[in-house]
Image (cartoon, rainbow, N blue to C red; front, side, top):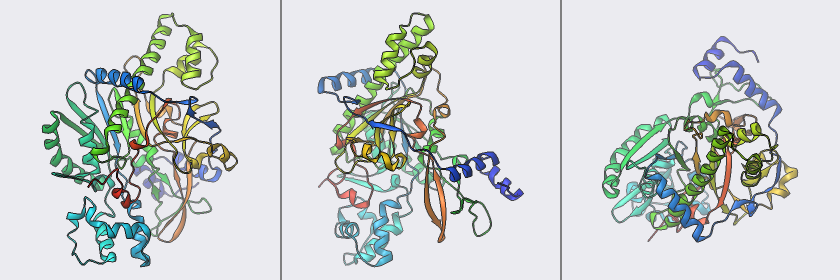
Amino acid sequence: MIFSDNDIAQIKNHGLTVDAVNKQIADFVHGFDFADILRPATVGDGILELNADARKRYIEIYDKYRHTHNVMTFVPASGAATRMFRDIYEFIETGTINDIARQTCENVHKFAFYNEMRLQNSASDINIAAAIVNKYGNMPKGLIPFHRYPNDIRTAAAEHLYQSAQYAVSGDGNVNMHFTVSAEHRAAFDELFNRVTKRYSEKFGVRYNITMSEQMSSTDTIAVNPDNTPFRTDTGALLFRPAGHGALIVNLNNIDADIIFIKNIDNVCHESNAADTFEYKCVLAGVLLEYQEKIFSYLNALDAGTGNINEMYAFVKKELGIDVIPDVIAIRKILNRPLRVCGMVRNTGAPGGGPFWVRKMGLQIVESAQIAPAARHIMNTATHFNPVDLVCATRDYMGHRFDLSKFVDSETGFISEKSQNGRPLRAMERPGLWNGAMADWNTVFVAVPGTTFTPVKTVADLLTPAHFVE
């Protein structure tokens, strides 16, 4: 593609290169291959299910470890709440009330954000809806009041702060947390953190160490017209769009911690319902540490020339789900990778993206959009899905941080049809932080209860028992 001097300047100012943009356009033209899934991961075949004794043991492993190591919580929090209020916008635009809008308006007094609304008692449904989106429609989920307590109203971000102090305190007494935020809302997050951390620190006897970063513009992707030529705005400029949360691997790569918890900003329940969350966070961390210890012992044995290659081959094949030749170089390469342990929730509705066995890649989290129509029958037999509940180890056996960019599958992505000011365009999104961006990590799946998965996809979800307590 031939770009003008103005185009090249815009590309460079975005932190990209012409070659990178041309590669993106080629991806639009050729598309992406589907994941070569073999079968779903299930309990006993790729997913560990732990009894009470095992869970207690793993909790003890983690509790002992965290008192001498640096633990971090990583929370993607840059997304706006537009989708959360989609049904409210639809009601305002059409004048026809839908189920979510009706439920929201009839129960508006139950929401944690109700007192901020300053609504008249006689406010009509349409006025209630308008007041909600005017105040919160363009706000990130992290800044929206989620939960009401006798002496506290907690936003989603504040709830993460409060709850992290109960399972992710490092040996130095710090609660280390990193939030990815948008530039326009960074100051508001700062204000929130400054306001609540003193109170929470005093309650739990901890210190908060909070850092923030923004998704880098160099991870954006160009938008194209339906014929795959560059989409241009009304001023003739190229249009770049965020490439999805998979781009946050760059932000994660800058985190310096021994282990890192990852959980979405909206997947945080009312504290009264958080007992399972606290337990299984610690369980997942204990599993991670046990696997890490085994892997490190193998790598150290290889360095010392005392390694049993057949034992290591059996471990890689059975525990990590990867079939490689029993060769020292091949085994070392597989073992010496970042490690993640992922909680998996049992399906209660239609199956979709989740844990699968993938040819030549072992255990992977695969989104439904990555599965070929001809393989949907395999997807439909899945028993579990991915709630985005991860614990990660990003140091190698010598204590050095991995360069996470070397473990990304750059040949994966989604292409979707969008619009800009009424004009159609095609947009590209890289697979998420927990699939394509972590495709070459060692992966362990653990079954976790559905009570640990309480996302807020629509505003009415805040009225469910996981979030609303009388």
